Length: 446
Image (cartoon, rainbow, N blue to C red):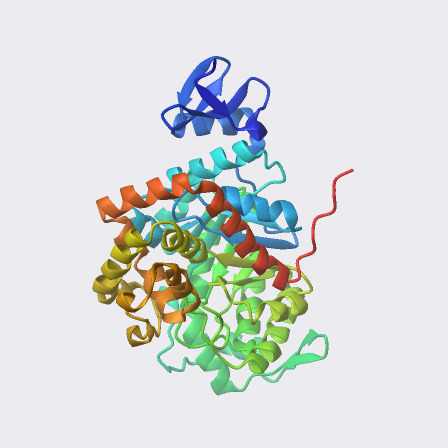
């Protein structure tokens, strides 16, 4: 009698993934057991190319679903089997790697195993997310990542300065009306143009250096995204048009661009701001993206349910959206449901660690709005995940929680026991995102 159980969907030729009597998964090649390590992942990617990432951003609807824990992928894949969108399954920033103690190799290997285990053969991407240095880009590309998100925030100057407008820039942009199409046009005053050049000039130079080194003339088999969203002030449509026009003039061809939209896209909660203004401006941002041949990318997209219908409508179903922290919150909600005592301990630790964690994030969390745990019965703990302040508390302290050795061990043990409940929760939650984004259901294969 076999001392292991095979994951049925993972049977491919003489290879499968199985779970041993000790509760640990392994790769079975013929009769040989191999640990699920980097060598095993490389073996799968070489033998079964569909377990390796590919550039996907040129597909209409793509969704980044970063998995900080390395266990959310089965739930993600269930959602993308239902909806006609393509996932970017590996999506981590260097900051997230540092906070979780993981590496890009580890992140990608976990995805490869999940894709093989679940027999997901429709293609997926891997995103070196919010990279700021050339060596970071080189690192991610060297590991086979199929997408680079270049974070230009350190080169964006939002201090209110005004640059001198050179004769070349004046000739290009002043005294002209730029027809975006769809009844939209843009003009610049000299002061407005000087302000925009001051804000984005260095960022455009930085993007060009990275593009020339790694992407121009097809050097890298990877998608290139430009992020200008990590700033204190929104990207106006006029600013977006200038950035797009300058990228085109310099021969830079991004697959996606992420502006900083109006309102607040804080972590783990719904959009904060004027929905009518967002809808009006998004219509122009989407038209600019179409005019220059790339997709809009919406960052911090986790749980922004109120704006999803606008995104789906104005982009005409051609967009990229990023989520990540919401999968961690679903994992912690499982803890609140299945082991209230453990959740109470983690929650108390998060409260004590909040001031340290908030250094990394822009949030408006008010701890006074979170009910005291001693006022809640065990069965009421999951309701905390309907409280925005409690969600942000747990969201931004993830690195400190996972860095606590005892908590990490106990949490992963619980998530392993409740793997099916977690997969169902992730599938339903990501499915809600895709539904509100108006992503159509997949048609059954004939």
